[in-house]
Image (cartoon, rainbow, N blue to C red; front, side, top):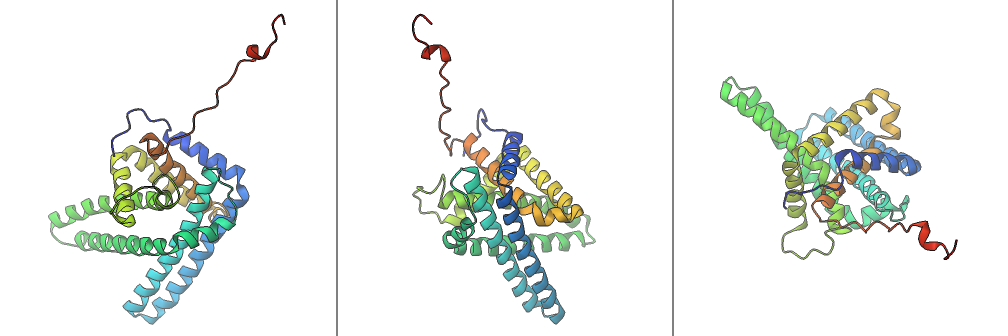
Length: 262
């Protein structure tokens, strides 16, 4: 994947497009947010009950199950956002289509994301608690790796949709879909650090705003976040030439429609 020489869609242009789509499709944005919130509440309650048992295996099993549930809900939000962004007849039925077409892939993606995040987080805690300065410095380095990984995760579900339904759907390769999605998400993150850092910062700020406003978490968080990540991911794919936009319609001057002598 080569560095784009002349980007056609900027970070803020993609953000404006996401904001416009969220406003134009406010009902679907609210439905996405409520779906994800319900999944979050169910996962949180299940983990709380599992924690009472004080059995590590039970807690981990329920934690992974909750992560899969959140992943499935988030995939539905991302797929709906993709249909909104591409003007492809979005509706609430997109949730069912997402689970039917991407359910198993989402399950594996959620498990991998949870496992990698837990491993990196545990390593950070282990290194930062060490009495050796070198180990603590290494812990800070691993913390940056965690931030890169979390940012890459923001690209992964939009890329998965592109692999199944969009720009990469006709791709012929022996490489497994999950390796392609993970590799491309990391390449987009590392190859576009200012863009990716801006995406991470905006999503983090959106999380804080929605949590502080309380009602925003239920009404707007997931719907707008899904639209934003989809538009940002597609913006980079357009800049790299992976997605080719149709040409702008030619504007014909009115003078060409005038009769001679008018």
